[in-house]
Length: 158
Image (tube, rainbow, N blue to C red; front, side, top):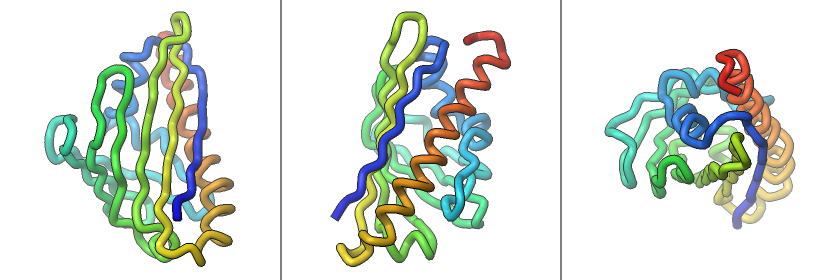
C-alpha cells in the first residue's frame, strides 16, 4: 500500500536556479526543518556526482543516515529519487519513500511540484501513517519550498 503527498509553489526565479538549490548538498539541508515527527535535515553527503543511479547520504536531526538514490535526472526540469534507511518510529510504518520534483517555467518564475510516495510496511499501518504523512510531511515539504523561495528573495534574485 502507498500513501502520496504533494505540494506545489511558485518561486520567483528561473527553473535552473531552483533546480540547483534543490540539489545543493550544502544549502538545501537548511531549507528542510521537518515538522513534528518528521526530522529536519542536518547534512547531505553526495557519494557521486548527480546522475541516475548515484547516491547521497542524508543525515537527519534524529541521527539517522538515510540513502537517496537518484532515479531520474533531467536538469533543470525534473529530479527524482528513492529514500531508504528510515528509523523507527517512521520505519515501523514506511519502508521507502520516492520523491519526484518537477520544475516548470511560469513566466520568469518556476512552478515547483514536489511529490512523495511512501510504501507502507503493511496495510495495517495506514490509519497511523496517513494522517502523519498528510499532516506533518506535507507541512515540512511546504515549509521547505517556502524557505527555498526566501533564499532567492534574500539574494534579490526573486
